Every structure is written in C-alpha cells, then in structure tokens.
Length: 308
Image (tube, rainbow, N blue to C red; front, side):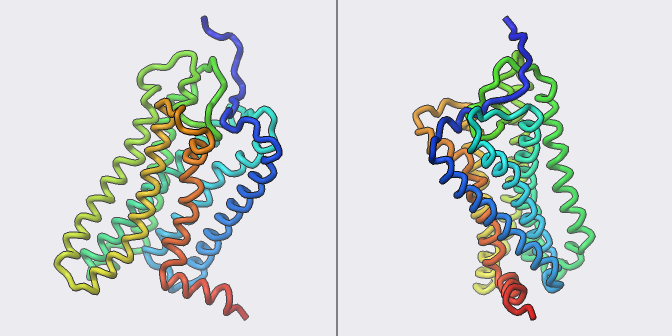
C-alpha cells in the first residue's frame, strides 16, 4: 500500500548520537574546511596576480582550485550544521541542492584532470606547437566545456529523481546520495535505478579513458627521449596520477557503499570512507599541484613575504 504521507525531509541516519563529541568533531571539521578554503584561495590569488603564471597549465590548475572550494562547500557546511541537530533532518530542496553541488563538482574534477592530461600531452608530444594549440582562447573554451559538460550531465541524471514520490525518508549516510534517495521512492523504473551508473559512466569512465590514452601517448614519447626529459615528464605527470588515483578509489567506494551491503564494515570507518574524497582531495590538489611546483612556490613566497 502506498504511503499517503508526503515526505518533505530526509533523515541522515549515519550521524547517529555522537553526544558531547560533537564539539570536537565540529572543531576538527571547521578547521579542516577553513584550511581547504585558505590553501586553495591563496593559490587562486597568486595565479591571478602573477602574470608569469598566466599559462595554460596554471590556468587549468586555477580552475581545479576553484572546484576544490566548490566541492568542499557542498559537504562541510551541512555536516557542521548537523553536528548540533537532534533529528539530523534535511529538507528535500536542500538535499537536492547538495546532490547538485557534490555531483557537479565530482564531474568537474574528473573532467579538469582530463583537460590537464591533454595539456601535458600537447606540451610533451608537440612542444613546438604548444603555444598555438593551447592558446588562451582554447583554454577558456576547454574550461567552459568542462563546466557545461558536468552541469548537463548532472541535470540529465537528476531528471530521473526530481519527479519521484517518496515513501521513506532515512538515508544511511552523512550526505544526500543519489542512489539512496532513489531507493526511498514509492516506485522507480529500472532507468531510475541505474541513472547514477549512467552518471558515473559519463563522469568517470569517459574522462579516465581520455586521461589513460593521453598518458600512454606521453609514455610512448618519453621512452624515446633523453633522461632529463623523462624526469621532467614524470615530475609534471605524477601529481595528476596521484590525484586521479585518489578520486577513482573514492568514487568506486562511493558507488559500492550505496549499492551493496557493507554492514560488516564498522560504522565510523564506513563514514570516514564515504567522505574520503572530501577529506583528502581538496588538500592533495593545492599541495601536490600548487605548492609543489617551483614556479608557484616562488610566486607564493613573493606574494606572502615580499609585499612592501
């Protein structure tokens, strides 16, 4: 029998009863969130101010830093507010808005890494034509395409959710999850149930395939070049490989956790793993890409310490 009560909010059950530890958790999360915002904002400002960094690679990096703030903001503010909630309820509009932010930022992350892999491919495989191929206009178009691709991708996926009627309201996570929301529907078609997998294919499989092809071509060129050029290629590509691996592992766990019974995993570990990407990725990016690159590191020193 269909539930006649209209569902107006979801309960994020994974928070449970954390008691007095909520003050500790709140302080840790707030400090971490502010650190993410500060680290990425500093790098955005440095790249914007220093004209020597107005090159394709650094412009694409700047786009990535913006997305790290965007992705973190999709999770941390709601988590912070839930620390002091007794019911852990979130209204449908806010839940859908969070889903929008989380999934669009995830798509932008993978697509941005694909764009950066293409940039490295052109720089290493076609160095003499790099400035022509990766001109400012084309870089701007690539960034615009990344955001539009991610937005349209999510809107298509979200169209399978927005019109559903819900008969349940308990989500066993600390944030709104696409597949778990669909499971709460009174009735859902097969297409509704696999819509998150379609989103995952377009968000993860296509960009990762593009990245792998780019790196295979880079590897083929590096095998026939000098040792110095090999080291340079490795130093510029390693951060992208680390970042991609982190996103891929986190993304796979997200879909496994949503679709399969992982009751044998302790609740606290499962919660940490479910937000693993949001904890690690926003800090991996500024430190692996930003502060680790000599030109950005020098610009940061000039910006922070040489101001008169």
